[in-house]
Length: 321
Image 1 (cartoon, one colour):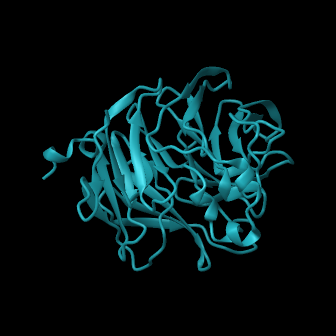
Image 2: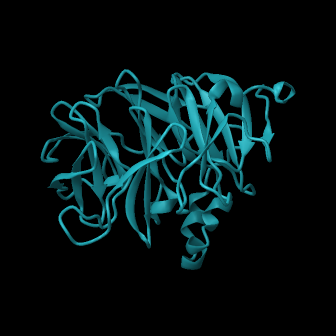
């Protein structure tokens, strides 16, 4: 039986105050070398800030505009360790921008029809790229391409073919990369995942039991009005995975259930065994570095991250200070 812990004022781990005079929501943190990259996209521009592990500002690249190096809407950056370059999908220009380690513009590759990365998620491979594309009922969501984004293989059809894609925010997919190069594919409406190798061969399909999980009644989803969608009322109809990260060799899932504004977090091995312990918090999982998960508090009035080991998160309440 899982031990639940509600985290309110206290949150374990190390608080890292970010050295900045700006204030913007943190949706993702991308570790690279000994730094943390945080994308910022909003009305004031499209920038990518880097900080050291103590929150000291290191630099920034990117800007909104019409020039060849400017972004229309640059998404979560991907760091190519082999070539020491940044790969950033621009979902307005429908292209991939390549920048060097310091953020200097190196070139652009246009996406062809049928290759439109979900939230900018892609992975460089020896022959080209592996791309997580926007999900539609009639096609796969995981594709392997050459260096010009010509698709050479695809896989990853949805778990539940009844899913109706009425609104992008209703159904999301996520791709995580294991330390051995395997790919973990998750769907927001399904308590489970698939594991593929880098040739997109399926290695494992896992379904797990998640406490309080309520599957969506798709007939009720179809009946939502435009106003209901704008008010995000689909959250009242079922459970969803809102965040997932690999922390060491464990998969940490953040779920949200009807009637709750907080997130329930559980950890699993990649084969589906539960890790003892769970916790509930308003803090959002936004990244992972080594064996530490990275959280942010969306309601805070300061810019800070929380770095905490998985074992500290999942300890029973009696062990907490």
